[in-house]
Image (cartoon, rainbow, N blue to C red; front, top):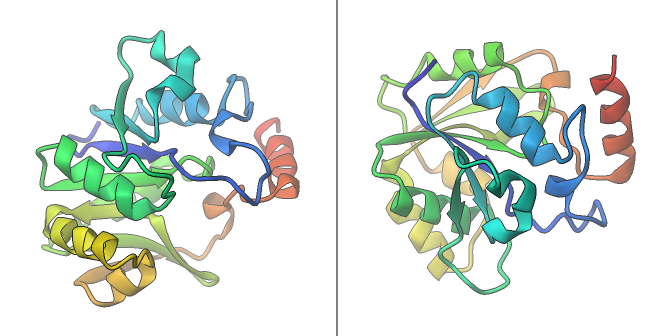
Length: 197
């Protein structure tokens, strides 16, 4: 297990899904968030869920081990920027691994490949496949905390631009399957079939 903390990002709006994807059933778990939590706690000693409100996750809240990081920004802004600011203000650590709640097929081998670069001084270490980069699967350093604050002040929420302007290492993966995002209902249905195999 690694000492680097992991944060599951579960505070998105899920507008394309038409329902809160973090609460959709997945695998043998009652929610996608629970599915992610149960498997990632075997990899990370310290695991957190970033969200708008922990009240959303009543079933998980019954588990005393679960730690939540609620968005410090109380308005209706659904952006990873807010989550990152809240994460770095809640956790007094230099680095954090983040994974979006809607990427249930990223396994330990992909995570380990990214974490191999944790001591190389990068602002961020991000997964990349032939179809593009995956900014919500990677390692972020506290060096970006001030930049996230500037982005929020300027109403700029494009992580791609931040990563381009920072000291970012992209870790290349040839297989797209682990990085499948469940943004639309048809992607969720296909992922359910895959998880039951």
